Amino acid sequence: MASQPDTISRWAEQVSDRLNPILVKETRQALKSKQFLATFAIMLFGSWLISAFVLMMLVGGNDDSPYGKYVFPFYFGLLAFTVMLVVPFGAFRSLLAERDLNTYELLNITTLSPQQIVWGKWLSAQVQTFIYFSAISPFVAFTYLLRGVDFPTLIFVLVLAMFASMMLSLLSLTFSTFARQRQAQVVLSLVLLGQLVWVMGAAISLGTYFVADESIDFSDQEFYWGGLVIASYYIGTFVLCLQIARAQLTFESDNRSTGIRLSSSALYWLTLGWLGLGLYQAVFGGTSPGSTLMIEPVYVVLSFLGVFWGAVCLFAATETDGLSRRIRSQLPKSFLLRFLAVPFLPGGGRGMLMAVLHLAALVGLAFALGQFIHDPKWTHISKFTVGLSCYILFYAGMSAALGRWLRKATPLFRPAQTRAFAIVMFALSWLAPNIANIFRNSRSVANPLFYLSDPINTLETLDNNLNWADEVMAALLVMGGVALLLNIHTMWRGFTEVVFLREPAADETAMFPQSQMANGPSATAGILDAAATPEPSTSS
Image (spheres, rainbow, N blue to C red):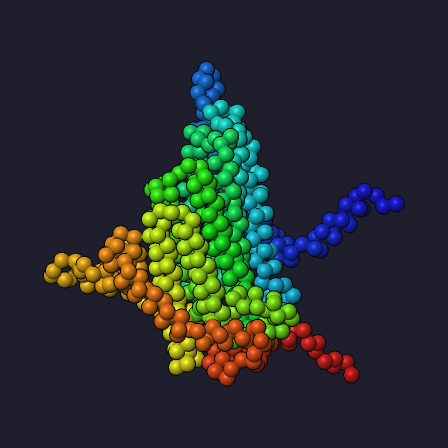
C-alpha cells in the first residue's frame, strides 16, 4: 500500500503534466525574475513602512478616530500599482519578448494552439496577481481593525480590483499581438502604459471613495441588477478580447473570424436584451413612455451600439473573400448548419451579410417597439435607428467595395490598409461640411442635406428638424441602398460558396491573399508539415 506522501507526489506530477506548458514556463521565469522580486520587495517594504507609521501614531494615544479609512488608500495604492500596472504591462512584454528573442516561431511549430498560448500567458499573470494579493491581504485587514472601514465594502473593493487586473492582463496581451514591428511596439508600449496609469489612478480614487463614504447599499436591489449588467459585459468583453488575441496569433489560412464575429454578435444582442428589459421595467413601473428619463437612455445606448457595430462591420466587410482549403474542410456537413453559419465565416461578402442581418433586425425591433408604445417621440427613435443603420451600411459597404477594387488593381493591397483608408475617409467626410461652413461669409447653411456626410448633425436632424426629416431620411435610404447594391453580388457569392459548397471563382483565388492559400499551404503550414515529417534515417 502506497504511503500518503507518495500518493500526493504522484497526484501532483499528474496535475503538472496536464497544466498548460506555457503557464509552467512563464511562471518559473516570472517568479525568478528581478522584476518580480523587486516589485514584491517594494510592496512589502511599503506596507510595513505604512503600518509602522500608523502604529507610532497610535502608541500612547487615546484617540478613537477611525484611522482605517485614511490608511486604506495607501495600502490599496500599493496593490493597484502591482496588479493594475506591473502585472498587465509584464504580460504585454512577455509576448513581445517571444518575438524579440525569435522564440515565437518555436511556439508555432509545437502542438500548442494560439488559444493555449494566450491562456498560458494570462494564467501566469494571474499567478503573480494571486501572490501579490496574498501578501498585502493582512495589511488590508489591518485597516478594518483601525475602524472606519466597512468589512463587506472592503471585500467588494478587493474583488473588483482582482477582476480589473484580470481584464487588464488580457487587454495587454491582446495589444501585444498587434505589435509586429519594432516601431509599433514602442508606440503601443507608450499608449498602453499611459492607459494603465490612468486606470490605476481611477481605481485608487474609486476604491477610496467606496471605502471612505460607505456609499454602497448591499441591500438595494438595483445594486445587484447593476452588478449583473456589468458582469455580463465583462464576460462578453473578455471572450471578445480572447478571440481577437487568438486570431492575431493564428496563421492566415485558418479561421480567424468566426470567434470574433460570434463574440461581437453576442455583445450586440446582449445590449438589445438589456435595453428591452430596462424598457419593460420602466413601462410597467409607471414611467411615462415619452419622458426624458426613458427617452434619453435609449438614444445613448443606440449611439454606443452604433459605434461598436460600425467598427465590427468595418473589419468584417473589408476581409478578403474566398475560403481556404483548411476552412472548407471544416464546414458542417449539414445544409442547415452551413446556412446558419454563413454570416460568421471569414470573407468580406459574408461580413456584409452579417452586418445587413443585424441592422435589419435592429430596425425591425425599433419599429415594432414604436407600434407597441404609442408616443410621437418613439417615431423619432425609429427614424434615428434607420438613419444610424444606413450610415453603418453605407460606410461599411463603400469600404468593402473600395477594398475589392484596390485589390484588383494591386494584389498587394491589404485589408488593414483598406480599414485605415476608410477611417480617414469617414473623418474627412465628417469634417468637410463643418469646415466649409466655417469659411463661408454668410450664415450657417440651413439645408440639412449639406451636412449629410456628418452623421452627428444628420441624426440630430431626424429628431429635431421635422421640416427636413423626410428628405434626409430619403437621402440616407439611397446611400444605404447604393452600398447594398455594390456588395450584393459579393454577398451572394459568399453565401453560395458555403451553403452550396461552390468552388471559389477565378478572381477569388487570383486576387485575394487569403484565397491564395486555398490552393497551397501557407508558410506557417509548411513549417508545421516539415516539423511533423520525420527525417530519413542515415544509419544505413
